[in-house]
Image (cartoon, rainbow, N blue to C red; front, side, top):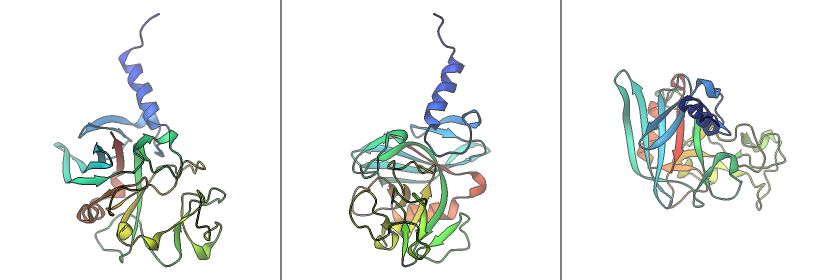
Length: 235
């Protein structure tokens, strides 16, 4: 039996990395790069990356990168980032309520938080209002979506179990600044909802990636949807 060629192996690896990532770019349009030891499945046109490299337990080093004419440049680096209390797991294997952070590369989609929008922010942004939720109700057509209680379509009143949606106003510290990732944009039920990049709380997260407040301020000021920003989570 002949051995597979290196090029074929690379294509297969890229396809595996992209499965379940939530990226819209096809595997053929992605480029694999290594930044701070993290493998990034970089979609075509993407020139901004947040890498998450777990250092120990639920601690991580988080770096904001931008590609320039001279190569990849560090815009911000935080050594006290956090991941989920349940550890890391392949994105396609993640289950809701496990406290795990999904490995892989995901788009950084839109921001939300407690402040009025600032002129320098280029991502789409939504200010959290009373009655705003992130839907985690597996029976809802709005699973893994931002939705207001007044809009309906999900069981916002549930307070226990895996179908409990997250009332965003309950987390004024963590969600002072937050960015939604593309994890599970296909709305696969029970895989998980609301994987964000947000401000550090007191300890590990429930599956999100968190960073110091100053890092989120920098991220909000620098992320540009025209650069197709992504977050890459590694070990």
